[in-house]
Length: 351
Image 1 (cartoon, rainbow, N blue to C red):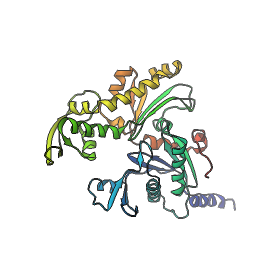
Image 2 (cartoon, rainbow, N blue to C red):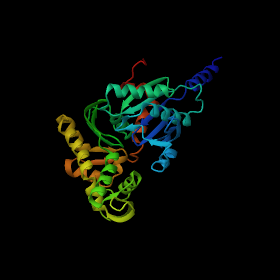
Image 3 (cartoon, one colour):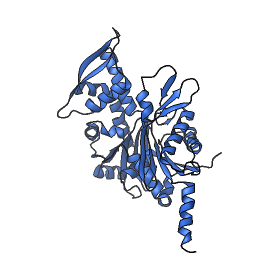
Image 4 (spheres, rainbow, N blue to C red):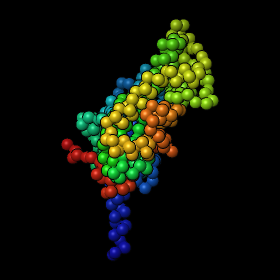
């Protein structure tokens, strides 16, 4: 009899479902499954039938359709600036992503931890929770992105010393100073990776009368974008549509020009770091000056951003080893060590 109890507990867990953590990002959605790690990393993109709004594709399949669809198909990004812009599309996208990693999807109802921006409103937070419930979760918890990023970066968030994290995502940049398991000072701005892409599109439209597609702008940011001058700066050829003649045109672009195109959004990100340091208590500011700040998120991959922040704040900057996955890994820690980290999570009964 005694030996049957562990099997019974395992069967109960399998019916209830493995707990999951979701980094529901503007650019990408990552799903972490307890005991398995990050099982899904897909673009937060949905392709819809324009008339019926039926889902045709999600993730990478939908992103490949962007800019290439007939009138009957609409490709959208249901998350904007870190929050839900299209609730129905977000709920269906989340449901499909969860089904991709959850084998027993008809019976299983996992607990779900979802990352949200620190400046999210109560209405926006309720929409995230409801999307989780509609996607099949039995209980939905939220964790602030800066806290998840700090956990994913391995920072000792429960110590009385100050830890600073800068998470540059697709829709928002989250800056936070954390000590004793809580956020002491923070700033969330809706300037991040998407704005870097938009700045490139605007620059070439204004300076060269050349219209670039979103994917071209993103590729240019990756290939030649930077926030601070460096060695071996590349020159890249880009192709767009001439706004005067209407025909395709190719031009050569230097890294220095791309850096000028990115100057405004990069300055806003650096200002957010400086503003947060300005309101940090002196004792914690001294810790940060000693330990440095941690840079994470997809924007951390922009060349020279760490050097730019270091130069303008005089604080050491450390880029985490896997900036794209650190928020999801931090949320995953909340799932793996649920009892120990539950005080970092918030929830409320479903209405």
